[in-house]
Image (cartoon, rainbow over all chains, first blue to last red; front, top):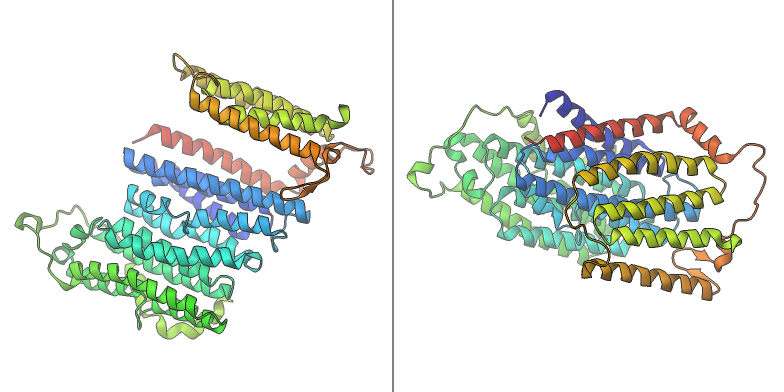
Length: 346
Length: 175
């Protein structure tokens, strides 16, 4: 793609999310979502083959439906309150419709079906933008309307997302689908605590983005999209196998790595609000996630995975430049002692 | 009948939307889109927005729909689908029509319709002379405010349209 056009379109994706996060008028928020959706389509279609076109079409259809539902909720809110400001939603029907629309945009169950298929069909860099940057805008709106969200619906969607994210990722060997199911599960954790303490949602979003960025950059560095291809990194850069191990265990939520911080805080906040069964269930279902991360570490770092002799030397062109990989790795594994600092997110 | 003109126009509006969302060939979709555009213009004009109704006819029907019609005419097939040619299309159209008829009967018969918000019968759709908007008309003032207080909206929508064109060119250009 022409570099000037590519820069313009990328800046428009950023501008769309910024407009969503900064606006106080519901119509501008909707315009921001549409601008974001429109501009990310050519980024998803960077490589021009039928897979990416199909993935971009699926993404466009689901997100456009979600925007239509959002607009309907905005108009119902307008009819009941007579104003366009984002304070709280004045009607339970509008609140439910808006929560469903934002859940469709985030990829929460039962609207999660597009996430693995779209993530699989696009390149690794586009998948990175899809799974990290695109989650910021809907989550910011959920944060702003969090006092008016129906608790039953949101908690049901959150728990089902953690379940689907764990169970669905078990049978996958394609790395992009694994990251997609991991994203579904993490979105479930984030929305579970949204009504109780929205600061923890923001904390979880921060840590999740850092860990996902790290994982994707390690995948891009070794140009691997399958488990088999990832298991050959010991041949290319042996150090990255250790880094993959640490980051994957952090994503699974193991102490003393920083991925443990959001899970710990969320479980603590939920138990403070006298719900015991829910965080127990969530913690148990996070083990499913941990299982397939550990399977990846087993084949990548802990064993030299068996392969035929002619596959042992990995073909590489020039080394890809990975921006900011060392700071990202440090941040996604060593942030746990800094937990008291999360009060700055208030 | 004249007091309930907005209700009648809204029924024709919904029926033409059913007409094109049951997906006949795009040429026929464009046909009912013209009808729905004209009817929508009538609805807006009944609320006093003569300028906006004119905008609908000029820009929407006379600009965008003409371009759509020309591009569809270039890409059309030999036997385009009508509403009665395909069982699926006819079924969906009749289903939408049936739902609209049932809704209209519900509104006409019952005292109060409470779907998401409450209408008290057909009388809610009638236009009365409400209040005193002074010597100026409100919707032209709204358009004027768009270009003064709402400059940010103009910038954002203008940028969205420009990026829309860039995106479409990128997507259709391909590799």
